[in-house]
Structure formats: C-alpha cells, structure tokens
Image (cartoon, rainbow, N blue to C red; front, side, top):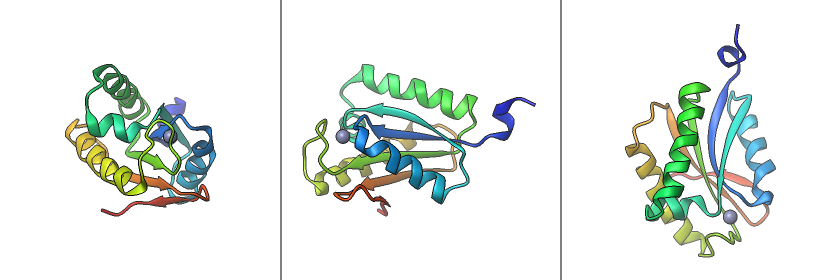
Amino acid sequence: MKYLDIDKFATVINCMDGRTQLPVLEWIIEHYDIDYPDMITEAGPVKIIAENKNKALIDAIKYRMDISINKHHSKHVFVVAHYDCAGNPVDKKKQLKQLKKALKRIKKWGFEVEEIVGLWVGKNWKVKKVKF
Ligand SMILES: [Zn+2]
C-alpha cells in the first residue's frame, strides 16, 4: 500500500511568516482528523488571492493546491490571515474582508474538496476558525 492511501493530508494556504507556522499546524492536527497539512506559503496570501492581480503567484498557488488535492487527496483547504502581517499591513477588519473574498475565489477555482476554512491567527498567536 502506498503511503498516500492511508495518510490524511490537508491543504493550508498560510502566510510565510514563521510565527504562524506551528500554531496553524498544531490547530489543524488538534481539530481535524489530519496527519499532514501541506503548506503553501506566501507573504499575505489573502491579499494576493482577494486582489487577484498577480497571475504568477495565483498560478503557483493553484499548482501546489492541485498536487495537494489531486495527488495527496486532501479534502480540506485552510486559508490563513494573521495579526501583524508584513506582507499585508492592514487592520484585522480589512484582512477578514480579504479572507472572505479569498475563500469565495478559491471556491470558484473548482477543486473537489469538502470544505474551505478561513483561519485567523491573533495577537497571542492563538488560531480561530472564522465564521462568515
Ligand atoms: Zn503575514
């Protein structure tokens, strides 16, 4: 049996910020039946996806999502925004608007997954699922 048949992967579109990595990984493994979150990192990914202007970055995100979803059989996509983001230096309110827009746009890309979840990493580096 190949490892891909038994292990459970997820797809995480996170910021490149080192402070968000462990909290997000730990939160996902604690709250979901997932062994290996695949990490797709960019500087301020919700800004990139919400604005939809940088085609090279968008294509690179989609390329990695395709491998995570279609080769690793991930069924869950997580999209992360966080406090004090250097790549996206706007307030929480604006970031949550971008997150909402990013989730909508990713849905339109048509990957077959069960759910696309928005996460917010706050000042204390605690992770919260965002409900829209
Ligand atoms: Zn960031």
